[in-house]
Length: 559
Image (cartoon, rainbow, N blue to C red; front, top):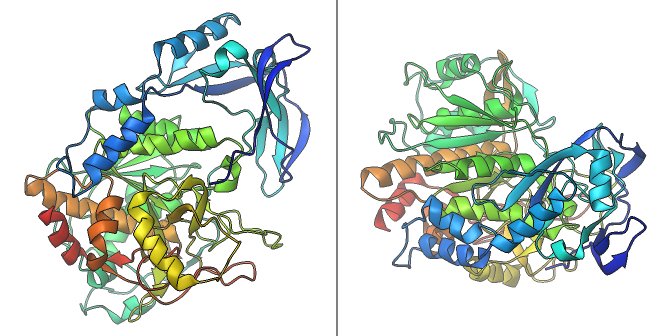
């Protein structure tokens, strides 16, 4: 595990008169300073307070997620989770008193009270933190960020603040789909003659192909307590009109077309033309997890805290969704300057898992070189994506082809530089290293959490977007596929009087391999490097493999 890249300089006396701990980062070469932020411009800052017992929550999560535990499936209540995560009273008092000295009142933005938010002018933020907030331009996009290269927390408060965002974190907005699609002609009577699988599925994917490849049932789910959540960012939108076209072409066995709900978070859009990512996600959840009530959460905050805000919204409810599917992510490198923020980001998913939610994230689409692939090939080590390295969620890679099914060359995978390898993964990763030998030596962190965990088809998914039919590829396609598989498995468990699957990694790594299709052909190259090869067992390209619903059903009904 790499140590944090920020510097802690103890007990500095600054010209502003603040005594405390200063956090400083070097100038990020990918961002260019433009000018000081306008003093009157409003800035929203979120302060994370140290939780009372996060290690205790992690222990509880593993206890309810391990099929060998007598507490398997006995998920925590909202109050029980909040008791682990809530900050200590002295931390709340120290931080609120500090803010009050500057006439600032904070809003509590997490159900456990461990996150506070203030909205203040830049001039006030500069005075509060002895900072110099500046507008920076991202050299690789048209994005601008307001950040500071250093800030100071008073000595009496420093131990009571885990992070402040945004300050020194140069994290570009999340990455969704880019140009990984092409327009196609609408299919003609795709389902008029059913084959197993249809010959068309050799090169093109629609729901029947996934049903045939992975033994996924086409029958409707029936349990009224079942549900599935899909997250959406960057102004992405799915429409009923596009979903209707999708069902008319590819699910003629289902009438009428099921609806889906839309919930706005942080001012996220709730109407407009269909766009690529959201359309793909909704069509391959509603269209594969037949009959499972599905909600699209449209998040307006296009930064790391949009993800945390959504998780906190879900955690504030008495019942969390049973599955959360996310087809967006970040470059992990952007979080190495604030490991505390990365840990807090990851811990909201530990909270969801402990309450019975299966959290799925796409692994990314640039092989071993993370989301923002650098075409100049100046990377010296492999670049993991984020939050796939978080040990409390399930990362989904990509495959393609039929007989044999092989790794998709773009499937991101590797090893985290922030999070250590969890114990549930030890045996699988060590087995892989035994086969890998010296390949890629020195290019990745051998003690880091490996990802992805699982994979599925990810190339040429038929998708209707704003009345046009497209092929879409990427792990953004495999992730909703797996979300649908989990939702249907949950339906069977609920009907059998069992709880939802929740955090599935301990089950998959301990008993799931025999219920998956092991992928042993292909690799995820990039920048002139071979990348990681897909080998027998788990590998950092396709994980443990692709689903076999029938075998998974037998497994999940037996535990």
